[in-house]
Length: 78
Image 1 (spheres, helix red, strand yellow):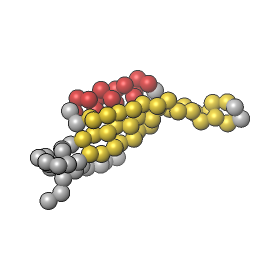
Image 2: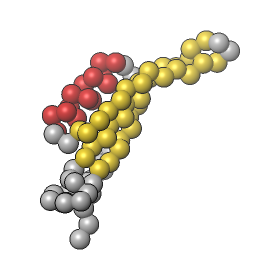
Image 3: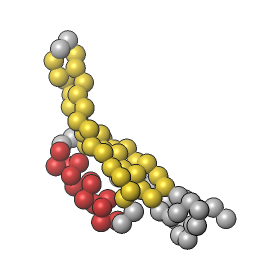
Image 4: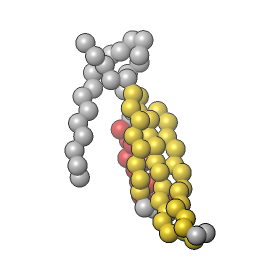
């Protein structure tokens, strides 16, 4: 038998509001272990040509030493 212990998901979003919404949605799920949000910029010749937020979510589903929950993850394009 196999158990999914945890996952790390990394998202790119355009605004701080989208990052906050993503974090709030993850918190509601009850499996969010830790998270981070980092503002990123891409520069060319000293000018900012692109900016975004990188949101990293670490989700913990069960304890490794005493697994009690089996999880199946499904990824789909939106």
